[in-house]
Length: 298
Image (cartoon, rainbow, N blue to C red; front, side, top):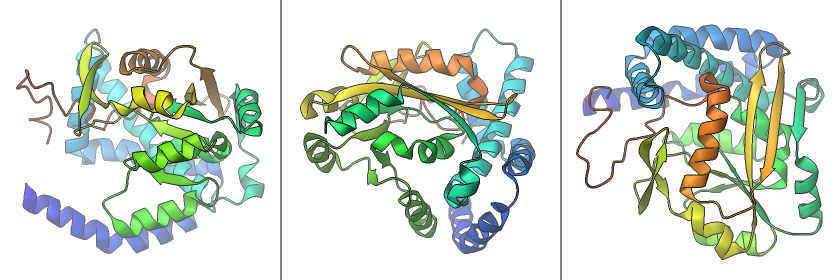
């Protein structure tokens, strides 16, 4: 298994410059064409990537036990197609010039409140999650005037390239640099934070679709420590009208792992195929549990 991972890593490192060249060329196509190609590519990878397919099905079985095997497989296929669309949208977000990007239809809700807080130099934290059109959404709103937290990609060349393209439209900060983030928030700057990733370091556990998942405890401490306002943000692609909808919702009380997961579960149910099911969301388990959900998937 380790040998296979090393081979995959070497191949990816060797082909990254060529893939980035193809991405730049691909971005010159009309966006609708890019998305159709992306959907077809995602459908192809559903059959090609056995590992990610198993992870996706494992997550879906845990989160939607009421669905039949046939419907779970259907949702899994749709999820892969949406990931392909998201990859095409990411290429567009990173490469389209402003003239062509402005032709994309975006509908935003609640942005005026964020702009008013920014004007008054009042910091806020936007808690969001990983849906397939994430890159397109962030560029469309310039991250809502906030600095975007991110995790490094293991491929240094790819990481440097993507980070450089993102920072043309909004500033970024590594998610683990908590001290720097708090200093930034206390100075009146704001943060866009994606909290739906498995956390190994000092995790806390909260139910997501009735299954405990590991989260960073910083989600609860950060707004209080920085004295920042809190918002939830969700977004989705409307396939019928070929448009995108982005919602900002002020959080009246404290943001906790439980309140975050309750909110996330509600918005995931609206467009389940657009969520990132290929991530090992339940990888880290509570100490009392020995079960590894993904043993047969990896």
